[in-house]
Amino acid sequence: MHIAAAATHSCAPQHSFNHASPPRWSIPAQLKSCRRNVAFQNRRLSISTASMATEAPSDFPKLSILDRRESRLLQFVKYHGLGNDFILVDNRSSSEPKITPEEAVKLCDRNFGVGADGVIFAMPGVNGTDYTMRIFNSDGSEPEMCGNGVRCFARFIAELENLHGRRSFTIHTGAGLIVPEILEDGKVRVDMGEPILRAADVPTKFPATKGESVVKAELDVDGTIWNVTCVSMGNPHCITFGTEGGQGLQVDELNLAEIGPKFEHHSVFPARTNTEFVQVLSPTHLKMRVWERGAGATLACGTGACALVVAAVLEGRSSRQCTVDLPGGPLEIEWREADNHIYMTGPAEVVFYGSAPL
Image (tube, rainbow, N blue to C red; front, side, top):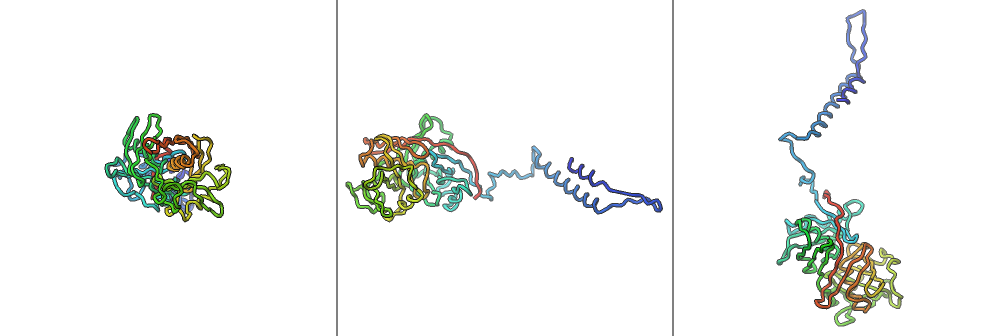
């Protein structure tokens, strides 16, 4: 009303009397324009008042932005495990992902999307498992598994199911059965199963150098010879502690963006590979940087931390229980001799809740 009143006052008609003839009002074009403006402002006021009403009319459609199916909004929770971040999607109602790999690429874009290293789907279990986990990387490829991702997955399930305290469940993945356990302090310990060492199963075209395994093999990358050990945690890993005749890596000095893709796409890795560059601080303390297949340089890689401890033990560089420092923080890794399983313990944290148009 204030706007309308102000408009009416400012456009008051300017009139005059002609004493030689009967009085007559003169309505200039300015007043006609003003009347149109007042009517427009009144209409705007009416619409605004209706939209601010605390109770809409009974026939007014209740449109929540999260309920508009036609706009294809994806609801999600973003988590990170030591900076390795993921978009988690509740997909328990379907055995097919809610989005395509191409849509995942857009969502993972850090400038034009949500920003993440991958999209993870919580899906119905198969073959007697509680849940199925699938992942699309930031480049749209689908890896078999992800160690940091499975910890985030466990915390996501606990929130969806309103679980409290110490909990454990079974997850079907492309790398087989994975069993995470949420601990009392909120960290997640994951039984990652047994490492795969047979060269053909990693897979790698390297000939075996120790039994059926590839340990301290020589890899030529642009004329530089690297000593590498190959391990699979359901996904392929190439672990290196340095070059032939070198003094050991100083991992902070590496240019990962330059060298990482050359390892990932090397011809000896038919399914490409994740690559871990490792610095030995002590027999129980290792430091690594990682170039992940399909994601590039990331702040952490859980399966990579597991694989490098296996490689360090096979090369005689470490004990079976180690702290592994990653750019995003430490993980505790144990390769148990009793059952040959690898156990990974680390955090998983919520970043934010959201929805994104597709």
